[in-house]
Length: 331
Image (cartoon, rainbow, N blue to C red; front, top):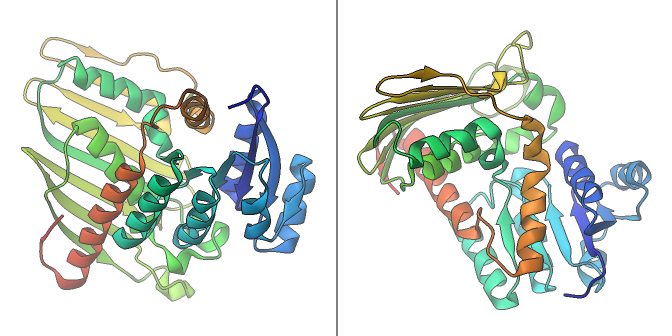
């Protein structure tokens, strides 16, 4: 790699495409070079906002030999085409969660990465969220013993599917929110999901013309740990944050609790209760991108790998299958 700044393009000009663009512009090692959207109006507006050229042609991004990194922030169902095209063109790719909405498509993406010999990272950015990162250290230090029970909830205010996402009916809380939860429990517990049993309900959103689940709950067997995950898309707008995010882990000798939407961490060990101070949570919109650039420049592998993306998608596929037939599914 030469000493010049890495040139990055962002594929997707929605809310999180803006997060990507701002992250690249914050890093002095990176030059934001182009923004893509399928919509000329969105592409033009984003280009003006970030003072960079815009395009509605994926081929134009892929064919630009000056672009080193492409980050993909398209809707959940629209990651695969762009990822395959950019990897085939030899670009390093950072893609939003989920990597794809089927295990087969994830495997295609991983194969394209291997053929190109480039870096691929899934933006499971909650690993950098300070309370969660601190919880990981707490578990690694053995302060709560081996995890026995885990509960994790991530829900959105109803404005997300009804006002923010025009494509909500093509996703749902199981694809928009569960990737975060599945990745976090795999990472915190350092275990894979063996079996999933899940239930879901429709009604509130369906009545508003959005045909997706209101809420999904899953019970997972992860080695010796029992895990419950739940997400919903109908949180009242009066809730204190756009999200309701909580993680609790009971270990053999202690317990930890995270109220992520309150940006706090509670740790209970055998002989002590504490709420350690955690620094700026906005690092989740900066540090994952910094990490990816480090990996590109130093030829190291991203901590959130394509294999992690595949594993998460496989778990969600099993959850969806369980919802549909009412039976537990091995992963």
